[in-house]
Length: 136
View 1 (cartoon, rainbow, N blue to C red):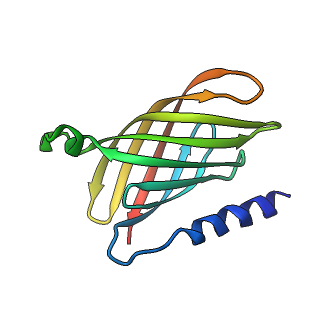
View 2 (view 1 turned 45 degrees about the horizontal axis):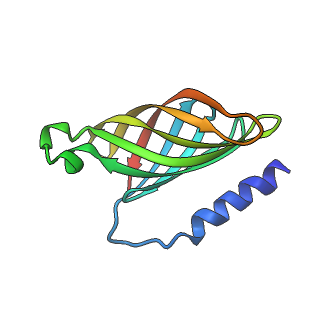
C-alpha cells in the first residue's frame, strides 16, 4: 500500500510541467510531522514524507520581494496544504516562515510554522523542518 502511495505522489510530481528556464531544487529534510524529499520549481514546492507517509504542496514567497527590502533575501514565507498518514489521515492548511543560507549549489534551510488540521479533529500544531537543497 505504501509503495502505491509513493508511486502516485511521484506521478503527480511528473505531471507538473518542467520548464528548463526555471529554477529547480531537490531537497532532503527532517522535521515534524514528516521527513523525506522535496522538489521545488520556482515558487511551487512539493514534499513527500517517507517515515510517516505524507504529501504537501506549498507556494513560497520571498520576503525581500514582498517588502522590497533586499537585506531580507534569506527569509521566505510559505502557504500550502498537507496530508499526513500516521495511523489516520490528517489534512492541514499550513503556513510559516523559513530561513535559507546558500553555499554555491547547496542551500541549508530551516522552517517553522503552524498547521491547522481540519479533518476529524480541529487542531493547531507548531511544526518545523530542517533540510538541505541542491540546485540543478
